[in-house]
Length: 200
Image (tube, rainbow, N blue to C red; front, side, top):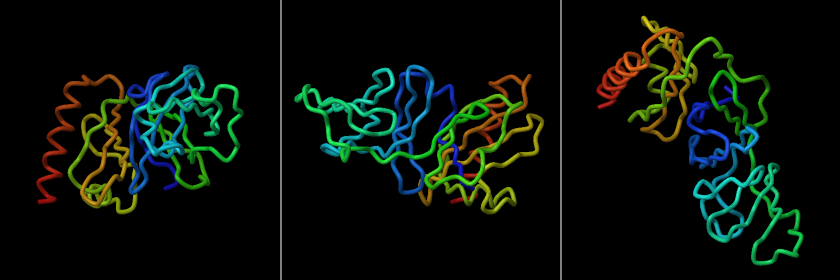
C-alpha cells in the first residue's frame, strides 16, 4: 500500500509536532496553525537535531537547537543567528506526501498512486503500540501484506497498521459510531494482549 497511517488526527492538533516512524524512516509529523499536515525526515539539516523536538511557528517548523525555521516545502527560510541572510535553497529537509483522511494522518514514503483509504463513517478510538510486527498482525487475521484491516467484532473495528520495526508496530483503531469508547478501548487492550502472546 502507498499510504501508511502514522497517527490519529486528534493526536496532532494544529501547532503540534510529534515523532513517528515507518520501518527505518524516522519522521516528524506536524500540523500548521491553519491545519495542514506535513511529514518530514526527523533531522535538521544543520546539526542533525530531531525536528520532532522543535516547535511550530504558524506555517513553519523551527528546530529547537539553533532555531532554524523551515517553510512548508521543507526549505530553510530563517536563521536566527544571521537574520539578514537569505538561506541557500540547498538547505532543505526531505519531505514526504502527507494528508488527513477519515480522522487518520497518512504518509507515503514514495509517490502515491492512489488516494489514502476511505475510513469515513468510523470514529477514531486510539493508537496503541504493539510488541510485534505489522506483518505478523496482518497474517494473524489472514490479511498478509495489508496495512488496513477490518476486524469482525461487535464494534466493527478497523485497524490501520503502522510498521515500525521487526518486533514493533502501532495500531491506529477506529470503530463504528455509537459505541462507548471505553468499551472499545478495553476490547482493543485484550486483543493486543492476545496478539502479543502469539508472538512469544
